[in-house]
Image (cartoon, rainbow, N blue to C red; front, side, top):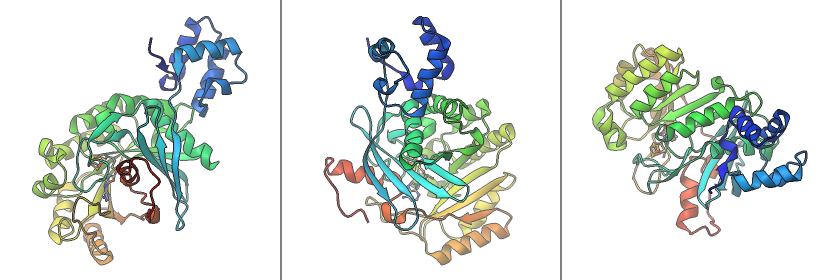
Length: 352
Ligand code: SAH
Ligand code: SF4
């Protein structure tokens, strides 16, 4: 019999399972506390009788994230992790310090099948979905390893969260449990490249999380060239889904826009963007594109970013240029893992 992932069980599910094993409620609560608190083995559960620990060991396993690399930015306090999973796959997480506390950016898949032209995560396709427990483990480890309380979570690392919908949904439930990490939905953001059916499904859940859309271009031809997903669901369909999401949840939507010199940073793009976002309560985040090896994109310069932002703001669209954190440690997800995998897991130099 395959062992079951104990960390992906909700408190209620774990209690039901332990009761069916003939255990008492308080034991289930104790085990849940260990699992949700980041225990990596049953042996650590010192207040649980040995016989029960042995039984749990027979029936369950605890998926963990093992630190393979940890890079700390010398510029800000951003910390980037390369983790190994139970099956030897690798993912990345980033912990960022903001005025209001610590935010962790987690991965939702190993690789990604969306294949956006500007992104390092998608260049080799999808390897597998992450389990709810593996997303949770990234949040818990970020807190314990840095000795801080994590206040916000963003699903903006490697992978397309809406392409792993059920596991992401379960993770959202686990991470928001007050008896577990207790990070409320209002402190969680989910970023998607535009998987339209997933946005409708997320809206139906009506969790008040922030939806972040990687828009990157206001014209279908440019967007389809950058993002294959746009050939399946175009901008019009995407924004329709965003309006629907907003109607249900009442939440402001964030639009991410990676500025590429000469491609999507023109005045015509700014004007069109303002037009298509009209009527959506939103915020636009501009970020200079991070060049990756496979394309020849060049980031827009500071002047172009400012002009673009000024234009949008003057047209009534709330826009900011995003602060880039951890620029010395390749804090953009996907980059570190690719370097690592391409070298067959050897020590890699030249991370600057
Ligand atoms: N798959 C989801 C979430 C992960 S990507 C999505 O696409 O939204 C997280 C963010 O990083 C997205 O906004 C994505 O567009 C952006 N991104 C990826 N590669 C980038 C690069 N080279 N430069 C700037 N932003 C990038
Ligand atoms: Fe996947 Fe997002 Fe990267 Fe596109 S930008 S390849 S959806 S991780």
